[in-house]
Image (cartoon, rainbow, N blue to C red; front, side, top):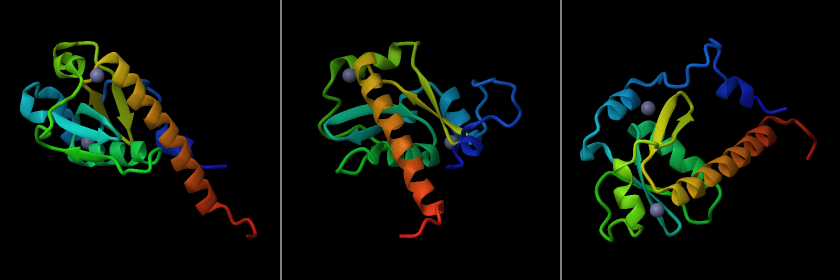
Length: 142
Ligand SMILES: [Zn+2]
Ligand SMILES: [Zn+2]
């Protein structure tokens, strides 16, 4: 079986999901200003996200596993802008989901529609990632 439980469970068992292990993520989350917003480009979606460089990279890699085009992260406002007006305004919404990624935290400052879409990508990507890891670990005869 794949070892995803080691990777994604909380060894302390406190269940305090608001605690971020990554200091870089935490400082981005504490800073509410616009300069901490990055943009995840995936297929035709432009999703405003906030996290540290390392965990954004991780998040986009996992989301990118579900698509033929690779996901990209921009640290500046995209040239074409954010196509979805609801996403543009979503940063004023306080009910943003936080996704825990490998010890870090990614906040999706997108509209509910696009949050759902990107979270589905992420979930599917995680499964794909775990299958890849499992097949690498497996010593089955070819
Ligand atoms: Zn981080
Ligand atoms: Zn949107």
